[in-house]
Length: 342
View 1 (spheres, helix red, strand yellow):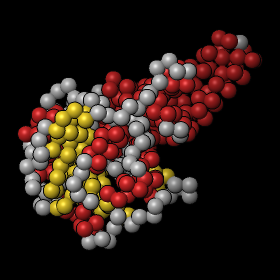
View 2 (cartoon, helix red, strand yellow):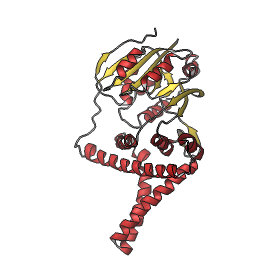
View 3 (spheres, helix red, strand yellow):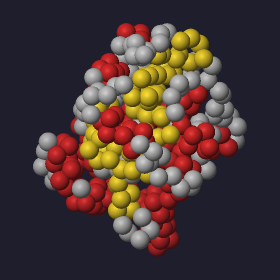
View 4 (cartoon, one colour):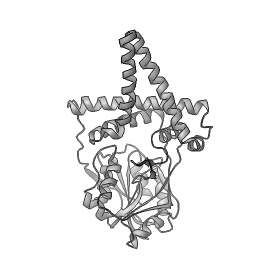
């Protein structure tokens, strides 16, 4: 048994949490502690987690970063590992992920996250916005930077950066950036494999993009979400303005509509060409089939609309103070059970 505290934020994950906990307790070397922070579920998430032997902390509300903070604060061990409820692990993932930490050869270890979407909409969403968790650096080099939800690290790092920010978006990337500023020893361990099975519907993805857009603004980093959108739609507006000046308002509006539709199609095709093999693999269809092309184009426009609505939410609700996001500290309601692993 490994002296590791696994932290899992969860809300209404009754259909997922059992599979993750089963894979954790079946590890070649299971963790000594598994903490599920139930962030206000209205389903049986907490009860199911407790039945598998997890230590369940029920709170009134919490975004994922806040839930992780609560879990770490109550953790009994000096090595922390994060997973999300919609994931599950290969049998030796935790052993491989924690070995360099236990040998004091690393301070942070990230495994490989393999995305296995369960819906067509989710397949396109992750390919469109963040295909294989690759990030392009300023020198145009592409690197793999997995999220924190398949990482293990020394608790002291969390203490030094004072945990996660409370936002709903960017909280994991911000946390990792602040940790990296400490110059820790970071190991990437691709053989420590985690699977993620998102099953979002089109409506859920729309709502997710809207709240992510708002919280990117709240985080003070609008460029991360809106940088390219401002350039793209700014160019559309410039063309429409030129058409309006020379040909009238009607022509200007027509140009604006056509550039939005045509530009969206070009952006979608560019993404498909860039990640052609992944589109084929994830969707199970030819990357250039009408269903994939039209679906990608439609989802792109849908997320653009959601992003602008998220910006409007921020302007009206937060900036103008109509109903600002306050980020109250979650209140611990109860602990359902200790982990069965001692």
